[in-house]
Length: 442
Image (cartoon, rainbow, N blue to C red; front, side, top):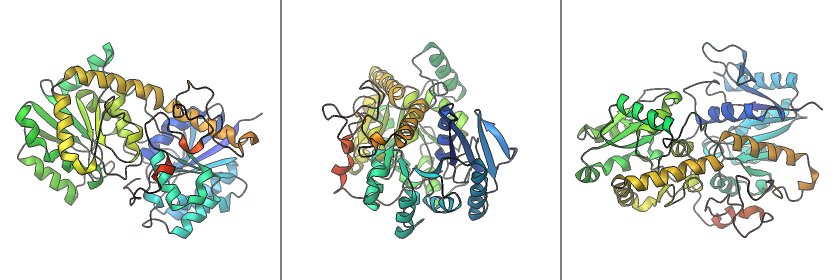
């Protein structure tokens, strides 16, 4: 029997492959090729400079189209899909594409993979169109339990369609510092970046208010009184693949001017340089706002053996184990708690090592691209197995030892109680919590 044909339609914002793309394209580029040979995947995306109309991306065919006009882009992709005749079309992070591609490919199953809450917000889609797109989608995949809860708050009737698939990381690219090779890489990056005799805190991400960099910069005076060798490195820019500034990023730079010896800004770097910055650091800080759906950068930092301090918000609660792989701090006390936890880690190398080792172990257990592909294939297999029609989460994993475990003592039959051993409350418990406006996502 021929493998199932599956098409993955990217937003058309960035080409694949690209070192300057958003996490949406990165997820597609990294996990889709791993679905072979179980399915025959094909990627559809934006044409880019020096990229051919069709080529292989990690042995997976990628077809590219001009995307300056998004309506034309979706129409051209829809026409190409008719030639491929996939059984499943997965739309990445654009609910409106579901409607258009269902119209041009009525026989295919349409899956929607949401990477953030941005494109389900009123700014990008009306409530009527959102409900219509969700009604047409045969399956809705989200990247965290937190995002699942936001989707349910907007369209509760979509409850039985939603599945969680966590993104991952390349553990070979983001290697552990606790190996001989990793130790050598860490020394190399620290010397090359001029960090050899400094204690280094790193933030890596977009310089937008949601990411909370201003909170970190505000406590630098308190930190350097105790650790005069401290350097805070801010890696990133407001926009993907660009060094353009905004009023907010210029405000951050002004905050850092009086502490030039202790604060360094590094403009946007290509993805290939990201592991080196994590390897060179001692602690990673991600003080994002509550709307962060997942926070892939946390997983990447943890893969290199870094303890991570992040806000107790959004999908980050599903990644970081408070007191084990780092710390989760409260938004309302962010400056005081961030100061306390940073001082604790900066003065205790043994604690940093202990948490860093557990961070790496957690990534290897839960957050690799192989886990992402395995989870996706499990969902796909269950789609064609009618035993799962009435209870789609039943027997979702092969054994209790598999990578994503149900909450101890609860049993697999409790569909909405699956916590993946994350210490994260289930969506039903969140009904009365505040539903926040969307994050700035791609």
